[in-house]
Length: 382
Image (cartoon, one colour):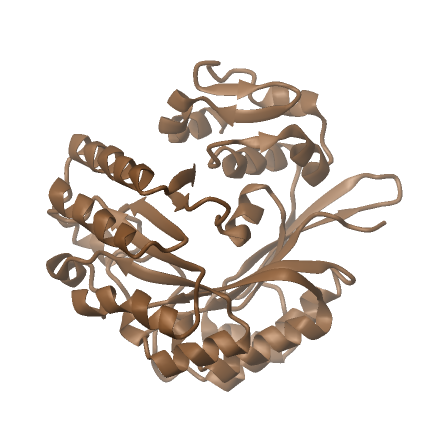
């Protein structure tokens, strides 16, 4: 039976120049373990193995995340894209590369564009010199300001800027200034998210002074107003885009689509249907440490773990993703992507206050009030 659920590919590049004090991602400072070609060889073997479970499917997007993927050469990125092209059908594919302004060189980014990358996500975080220093970023405010120009001169028109708010000792004026500066570049997409203190980070052990809750709320609402005034529509909790320019890769996650994850610590989700139309959703994850991942992959030990999702997990994960979208999800998406019934979904959200969540046979979504209290809704679902 043909699988018509959209399929994406996530490629994890785990190295960065310097580990940021707030970062809890699987990233590692570039050191003796960094071996670009050996890692690429492992990635290609990983992709070959994943292909066995999803042959004849079309890739809708590829996302190179990290770490700092722009540390890799354009030739390495080309090898991965080209190998994916030999395995999967490509149809109007979106290919995103995360980049740090501290690694920008126009010649290199022109080569990334020629390698097949057609969307760039630039980790600005702030345009303020002092705040960048506090965040431990390797770029300064001048590099942040010239990053978009460099990207455009390299041929990129589809660009996202990552910005954070609620930073240590940040004022509301500084937060608004960051957003206003970002808007002047008129890029396709802006991601704007709050700094949170995560376990196993330097900031968790040495917590800086953060703005209080009321000030963070004011930062968020005033920045949202600036974004709206500049025609950036909020379509997800932390994502804003110009009309028709949402990130297709992330939308696939939020619509509970399928995705392959290759690279150290990468996760994937694949859906299969049997002849009796029953649905099986499998999560797989890879060995986390880069050196371990490479060694295991070369030895044919391709998966660190896997789990077949039960109905309760499927319902929660669907809602966890779908309710991040301001528009929620069409019930047809839910049925198609989970194989479950509307009644099962209705029962799962039955105790949620109707002033926070709306559900009928057409769609499920938060109300405007519920969108502001999404964490509370998800806690109730748990």
